[in-house]
Image (cartoon, rainbow, N blue to C red; front, top):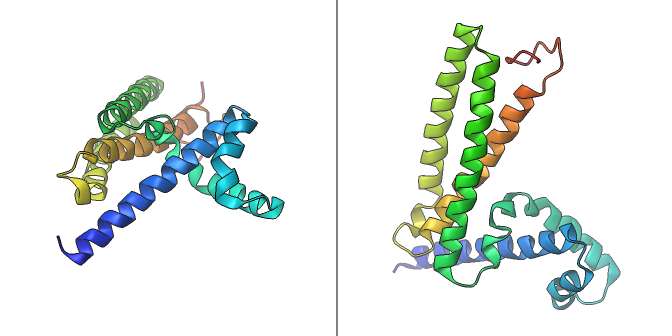
Length: 182
């Protein structure tokens, strides 16, 4: 392998390690598990309270994208990580499809806007799939590929879920919302 390829693989490994660390942080905070928090961070930052605050603030910024790997990234077996990431994506995709159907139903009396929704969703799916193929291309031949690919798919799908949820929760009279309020 070339030096450039090795450097890219190292960056990917570093990126995954950061996401896994952020997932452990997120788990500990969400579960209010002080012992888990301390065991994750005590050796990382020492006993300086200010460093603890800064580390928590910095990790909070990256914890949201790592949410897809929150449970899967804690696993130690690559096959289990791959299966977990696939299930996380499938769950998110199911939620997305449910919201899409709700959005279509809400637009049933507006054929033109429904066509726009269908066009937008098809384009979005094509983008999501292409983006994740691209972003995981450096590990396409490796055992980590399904994990990286499905984590990407799940993350982008979660973003689209937020979009559709926003459309479905628009207030009456919101002119910037293409979906009528209930």
